[in-house]
Amino acid sequence: MLAVTKTLPASVARMAAEAGLTELGENYASELVAKAGDLGDLAIEWHFLGPIQTNKLNRLLPVTTCLQGLSRAKEVHAILARKPGCSVMVQVDFTGQDGRGGVPPEDVAALVTSAQTSGLDVRGLMTVAPIETDAARRAFRTVRSLADDLGLRECSMGMTDDLEIAVEEGSTMVRVGRALFGDRPAKF
Image 1 (spheres, helix red, strand yellow):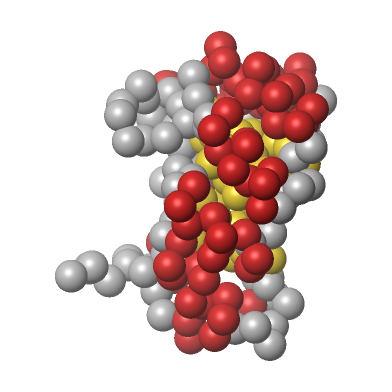
Image 2 (cartoon, one colour):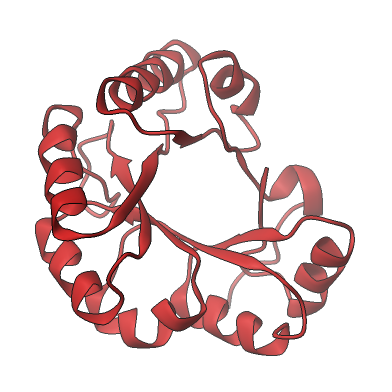
């Protein structure tokens, strides 16, 4: 389980880590960097979740264990220039919406191969599934199948509202925030 602490104070992330949840996820680079600095005394594996902005990599990579959101060849090269061998997960997109991040399922194999041959450690695939249950199940099943076909060990799929379906379909990592910490505070 990856405990997602986005928009929550560092004190909540500290409590989670001290309770044994040492893999934590963040969606905002600035939050991850700040929390990693505040909690540097703890052995936390930080995962950055979502679209990768190459202009933030210099600050993000020194404190991040895994980038879950690789979706473009441009990102492969930017990461390699700063952290060869970096652990990444390719994000698979099932929405087709601009700004959601991810690569269409039919383009996953090419991006995984490119990232691997370039020297990145592609741990697996991740996705944010559609809201509708049957569509989510199909998305999770597709991601699991793609990962298996590519020999990838991890499938980061499932969040608070769909984690049971994700686990049924082969998730190896669920990203849980609200179910652990309650509703997030509103951002102002």
